[in-house]
Image 1 (cartoon, rainbow, N blue to C red):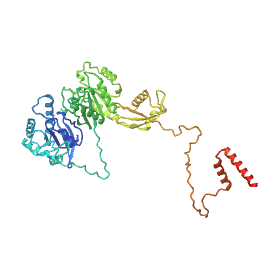
Image 2: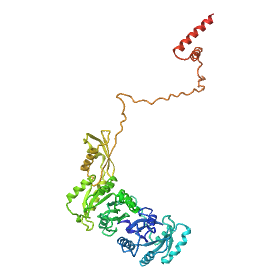
Image 3: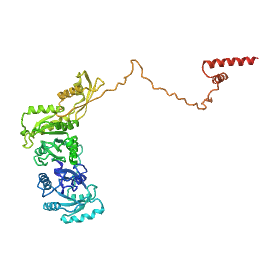
Image 4: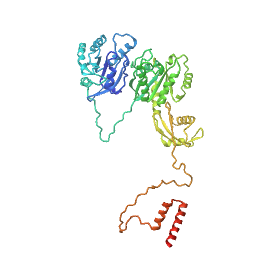
Length: 517
């Protein structure tokens, strides 16, 4: 059971473009909900956890409600809002403080008062004290109390939350453990992200998995914008399913909301443990399917290809379709393939077993000793041997290989090694990453029987200090003899070299002859 099932629920409602998503992000401290200047960005209801004054509660953001709009998507938005309002413990009615009261505001206020649930009015966009007088006008709606807030600048939220949570129970702290008792670690849920092109049936699939109308479904491509997530527990295993927006080609994405929804979808691919790639069986595998699959493959996520609308396929030959699929998506040779119909529910039940299997192998770890026994005598093409191999991490399984040659593994050798690892240890449904390292040789560059070179000595000479030793003798430099002084003087007078030595010698002889005379 999900944690949100035990917490009181606070629902944020209002007409489009009044700041509901900004308030949701401010209260939850996240950026889950897409915020923009375009009205009607949020369509599905989005949930999050908030805490104030030691009390935890669930926050639900709904799409902009227009009660008298009978178009398909506004009708579905109102229907999703009613699902949230039915279980609400408190309702926050958000209104734009910079605009006048509209007929849509009055109709929505009348609808909320009929629910007979705790209700308050949040007049948003009251950024400064000069705008506080604008709050008085909105008392005409007949809803009390009224709070002037600024969701963007976090002004007035503390006082509003004090009123919201004053009837909520305090969050129960876990009881202290007895001596010698160990805390039971709760297994985190398996995060499953549903991705694919627009209008391939992703929202229909998550509704079929959950058994309820959790996401808005319409024939209009690009209906889903925000990421819709929901917990489910089946056979003791917790799952967190995340329905993402359809990923278009970059050239066909023009609106800001669509660009942000694609960014959010790729972000939730990185957050997931297992990715479900949904494709349309009536159209077959396309180039955009390969591009989207490449996003999950590059992130190293375990992947399952879900072929939806199989009941409407023109040629229901699974072997032929899977052969075309493998030929188009050659880099997904490890992925499992499921043929389903989300509309009728056919084949949806098999996904849970596939998800558990893919998650198990992506989290599988092999011991170093077992890997070394596997690599003994292993020779890869072209003539490459593995000296040592170890597993560095999981999700995806990453192996570090030390080959006998100081070159990176050829792609054919790397593929051969991955295939042998799968045959020996499994790893179905998950990519495998191979990294090459080379052991450093401390004797590289040395000749045989050659001693290592010593570092150069310090050739700087220090001037002698004139200190007396313990024996009374002075450490001063010794006096040089007269002959040495003469030699030094002559070498300075006549220069240096052999010629200077001969000149100095002849000069000394002449001086002796003069002395005899």
